Every structure is written in C-alpha cells, then in structure tokens.
Image 1 (tube, one colour):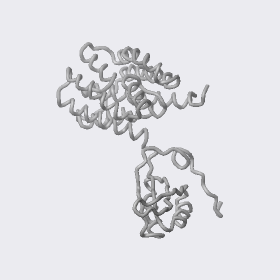
Image 2 (cartoon, helix red, strand yellow; image 1 turned 45 degrees about the horizontal axis):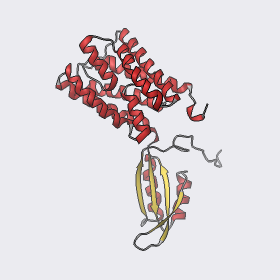
Image 3 (cartoon, one colour; image 1 turned 135 degrees about the horizontal axis):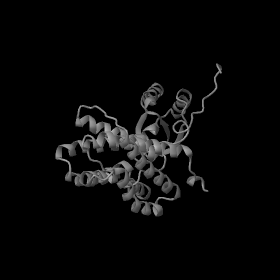
Image 4 (cartoon, one colour; image 1 turned 90 degrees about the vertical axis):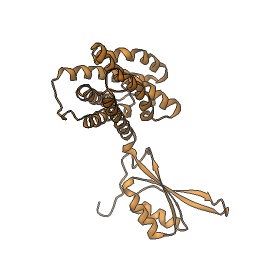
Length: 292
C-alpha cells in the first residue's frame, strides 16, 4: 500500500468522535429548537418534519448514490474514511435519540444557533482533518477542494444555503435566520479547525543589515531564515531579502528585533493559512544550553 493511501487507527478515532459531536448538536440543539441544517442532514430534517422519518436512517439512504460518486473520485482511503464517517453519523444519530437528555438554553434561538454551529463545526473539522467526511455534500465539497482548491468551508456554505431555502417548507423565516447564523458559525469553526492549528505569519525583510537580523532571528526566535535574491524595479539594484515564517505571538518580538538592528528596514507581514513542518506541525528541535 502506498504511503499516501495508508490508514491510521487515530484517524478512525477522530472520525468517530467528530461524528458524535455533529450528531449531538443535530439531535439536542437543531431538532429541539426547530433549526434546519444544510446538506444531507438538512434534507433528513425536512423528511423528518414532513414524514416523521428517522434521520439516522434517511442520512444513510441518501448517501448511497453519493458514495458511488465518491468511490471514483475520492480515492481508496478517503472512500473508506467516508463510509466509516457515514456509518458513525447514523449510529450516533440513533444513539443520541435514545438518551433522554435536555440542554436548557431557555429556548434562546441565538444561543441555539451558536451552540449548534460550534459543535457541528468542531465535529466536522475533526473528521476533515482526519481525511474523511460525513458523506452528503461533504463528499461534493471534498471533490471541489481536491479538483479546484476551493476551501471546504466555502463550498459547504453554498450547498447548505440551497438546502436551507428548501427548509422553509417546515420552518418560518425567524428560525431560518438563526439557522443561517448556525451555518456561518459552523463554517468559521470548520475553517479554524482545519487551519487554525497551523496559523502563521510570513515575514519578508529588506535591509542593509540582513546578516545581523538573520542571526538575531535564529538566536532569539530559534526560527529558520531564508535569504532570497531580490532586485529593485526602479533602480535595478540587486539586494538580499530575508524570508521567515513565525507564529502570530512572535510578531511583536520580530518587530523589536528588526527595529533594534535597522530602524529603516522594510518589513512585510503576511498571513499564512497553513504552514507544515518543524516548529508548526512537527515538534520543535530545542537547542542545548549550558544549563542542560
């Protein structure tokens, strides 16, 4: 089996936990407070309202044709993870409906929308981080991400709006507005879960004292520094530019380092959506000191 197709027990565990969180919010928040949902879950809620069909069964039935699409486009590992995610979602939807639990939010629809978005977003985010989906429009969203680079949160929001409009069959406009709040919170939490852990800032520095600045960055921040060749467009003068990636909490320290060494230096700070490697997704290699 190729390395990129390998499957890990940890992934299955996170998918199971994520499905449990998503199903929990759907059963104890969405259904209780008459909030709709997007995707296949939203369709299952429409069928529940119209025909009293159990979402645990309808989500599984609706996902079957989508799984056939996923088999051809998602690859072996993603397909297996998605099948497992769909099964876990159906199981947890059934389990939570058997447990008589009440979450007292005093029927506050604003709180309900936020809570549903947070639980669902974290749950789905865990599933996506593990390489799986919970089926339905998640499959379509992952296909868009794989084929065209569209973020999953964005494509999910578009698809969810379509289903939410159809949900006006059984909810009024007030509940729809709070459902849209839930969808917005859900999207933000999904994006945060997928990339928030790797948030970083890219620093580009132009200075006549590049060597001193680079040495200070390596010594004080223990970050790697790359020197790039640059050239001014107006003067055509060749120069060196420092490129470094740091965490957001290190930005102020970086600014102090540069100002201390060269207060005329030009520094550009750019957000980095994902940054993988040592110091971010890997364990930082600590330097030994005379105290070790």
